Length: 472
Image (tube, rainbow, N blue to C red; front, side, top):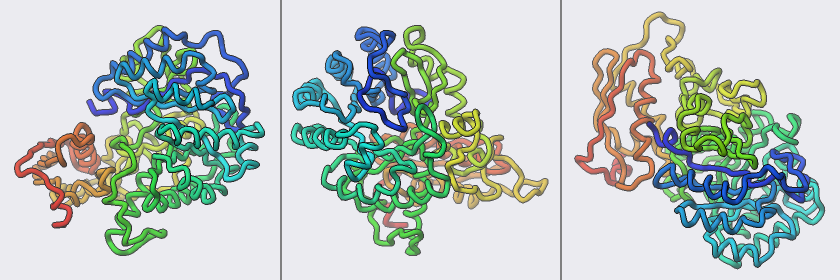
């Protein structure tokens, strides 16, 4: 069982759909008043208990909406999460209801992060997107108050046809706000969002290259939602920088590969149902809010069991089930594509992501365990230690930006027919990737044509040291 098979990285609870805004892209199709069928305070506490039950460390809990501040018990729910050892984040709407007193109460209750949406570089642009005049002014006031109170900040920006031209102008505003993270949410046509608001695959690719270049020098972290191919783009830029042949603006002198990220991250892309689970205001459990396929209700079934055992969730975590280009892609283990966009476009959550412009090279993995014959030949190429080592260059440590080969983690490769044995080590004790790195290695080798069996053996003799990077 991999890390994401055992527990999600993020649990999002839509605490209410009540909201004073009228956002043109609203996933929740928010309503003016609270729904009488919302989870009660006691049901909310039990839900938080089940989030804690995933184990140590528990997932991050995001309290969203609608506007979660429309619930009078929201501070109590944050305090309960803290008592259970669960880090809670909250996404209030940009309205006058976010007072200094409420923010102080949330901070004192143990709120781990405040995530605020800013979707335009000007008041006119942001307010038009949010559907209410004055939302931009209130949003800036929330950011100012939160900073004064010492609350860690995240800024969320929807990336779509209406906002993409403002992204560059938002950068100096991010530098002034100093969030720990700028989260770019690539629009999925669900709820009020329309297909014509979404960017094309080529446009998404361009934004991802721009974001990856920004992340190389920005004083804040940059992440994407519903664009997991950002990992591929960022890794490509790092490889170009190390080789001294910059591509698409990558700087050979960039220190992005060695500079620690602004915050802790998951070991791979967090995607719908794979490291992510969503509970709506009535308790319906879905792979994500952008992939609204209810599989159970938290009032009736255990959240932990549903996430681990439900057939849809299990399928979403199995890269061998992916279709089209996603199934053939060498990055399917770490990326997997947006399952929500695939579903919105085709009705099949396992189809290829139409928002990805990447075309996998011939002979890469497929949805049938990656064993298609290269070039149409009826004979698979020989499996050699050299070919295995080259395949392992696709396994990248996302924190250090280097492959397991470049990090010196591969101590030996032995091949006997279709059986491969990889002896490897791991980086320093306590690394959050220890639970998944060996599995990434195993799956990368299984994706090679001709490989039938993979045994990954871990050793800590000799121990790994950062000097191994310099030696390569």
